[in-house]
Length: 234
Image 1 (cartoon, rainbow, N blue to C red):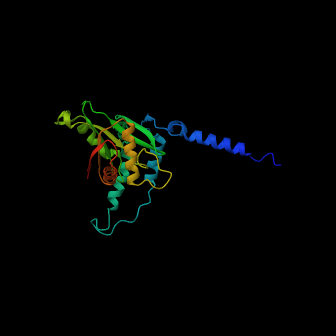
Image 2 (image 1 turned 45 degrees about the vertical axis):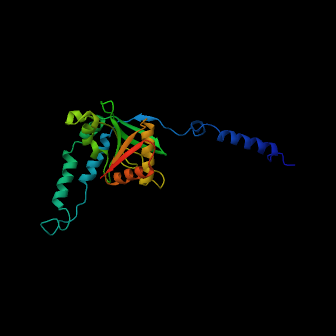
Image 3 (image 1 turned 135 degrees about the vertical axis):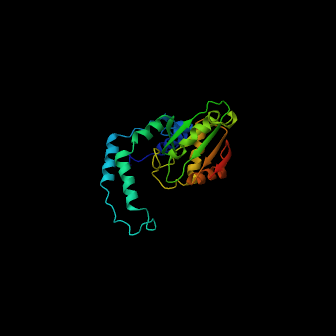
């Protein structure tokens, strides 16, 4: 008789244990899930900036165009002047400072780290608004909206025009993490944004987006998650 083979009692005990685990609350049965929201600060090492400037300076340029207009594309001189500006004059720390002046956070949704800016209005009845940037852009394209939307009275508006603003970086963009699997199309991002707003405690909110962000926002409207009361796209 093989004493190493599992007995009927062993199999039954294992099945009962597995069934008991499946009845545990979700946060215990899936202890690896991390729904915490963590503060985030942009910190670009100087070595990274120096390396970028070296690579710009080492660009191998094509031959000069044969025409005096842009019919063959952007002129070589224009591109070289832009590269010179990035390599010698551009202040990388200026943008870092501008971003760090705003409250930034990260949270993990569906296995991907999501970076977002979250600015609350000083107006008590402000409506939460999640805005999605386009391709190949970033939350930087939305920074000019922060003041007018969160503090409209300082920009000639009324208190009832105020919003609590949430500006997430699309997966794989900016400071958000890169998905490790296929399937992160607009519909899946829309579901992630609904999870984000729920995680922030917003039970009634609106959404806006442009370019690819418009597609994500359109999907939010189609999915109609609980709490979403309206969308705007451009």
